[in-house]
Structure formats: structure tokens, C-alpha cells
Length: 139
Image 1 (cartoon, one colour):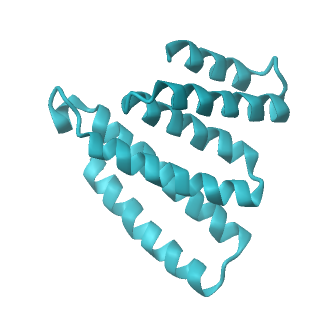
Image 2: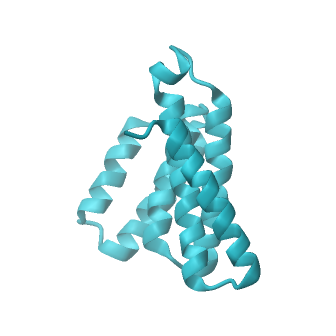
């Protein structure tokens, strides 16, 4: 069974490998893989922050700051590739990071952007749209 620390190490190794491959031959597939790894690393940092076992009752805000930087890098890649489906997932992660950092206006704005993209891709009555509305209610 992998712990969050092991998962983070695996992501770091994969990120290093993908970044070096992109430096040699940047392809659409490699860029999408890099953005997915960055986004997933952000999720790992958030789960570590959110875990009272790993951090005690108060989490390490540095993990949120790391997650924010990773998600923003992933978003810049996704926007340049016009990969809106993956962008919505990353925006949702980033919105939760903003919430943990008590940046509530940014969290709402990020979720609003995710909602707009979801409605454009799936329609306003979609399950994905309802999920974004539900997340907005929590913020």
C-alpha cells in the first residue's frame, strides 16, 4: 500500500522524467501528460494538507501553496492546448486550494470559470455542471 509520501515521490520522479522528455521533443501528448502529473501532484499535496494524521489538527499551509503553484502550471499548459475537459478538473482542484488558503473570492472565481467551461462543454443541465454548482455552495 502506498502512502501519500510514496505517491508524492512517484509523482516527483515522473514529473522530472516528463519535463526532461519535453525539453527534448515537446509533443501534445507529452504536454498533456505533464499537465496531468502537475494536477495530480496538486491533489496529493492537498490530501496531505487535509490529513490530520500527516499534519496534526492544523495542516501545513506550504502544501497548499505548492498545490496552487502546481495547478497553475498545469492550467497554463492546458489553456495553451485548449484542453477544456482537463482544465475543469484542474480548476476544481485549484478552487479547493484557494478555499484552504482562505482566498474565498479567488475560489469562487475559479469555480465560476470551471462552471462556464463545463456548461460550454457539457451543457447547463449536465451532471458536471451540477457538481460545480454544489462545490460553489460550499464556498
